[in-house]
Image 1: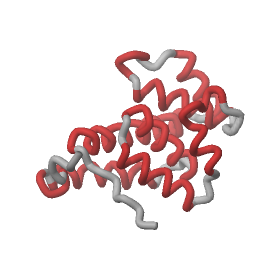
Image 2 (image 1 turned 90 degrees about the vertical axis):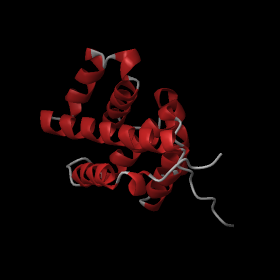
Image 3 (image 1 turned 180 degrees about the vertical axis):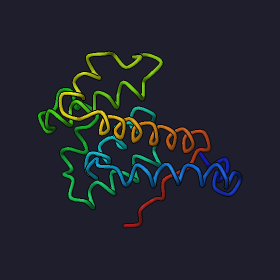
Image 4 (image 1 turned 30 degrees about the vertical axis):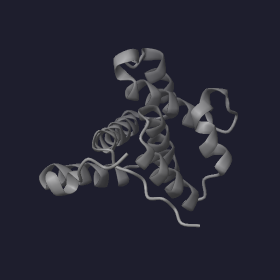
Length: 149
């Protein structure tokens, strides 16, 4: 497999717009650790190897445990996440799989138990942003770097 093209080079204006969106979500009230869990989980669902590689490394560098990172594939059955994190992971799944789920009311209501409307909007924007990055990376076949040992 090889990368099809570099979106930043071919469409610099569009790429800059994505960077602007990323800068917005990086400065919201949502914790860095929760943002990384969202990014990893959505990237798993979308099959984005580049983003999974990037965000698991970022999460580890911020102190996230291997157990919690590996457990994201089965978060519903894993005891490693707080009720707030579980609510956000449920919303991440629902928004990422939008065509199948249409974001059920119970999933939304669970997030609202823990987060106010502004925080919920910020969480949704984070989910939307990583889904956009995943779609760019997967469609252009952006490959993760191979780590040297």
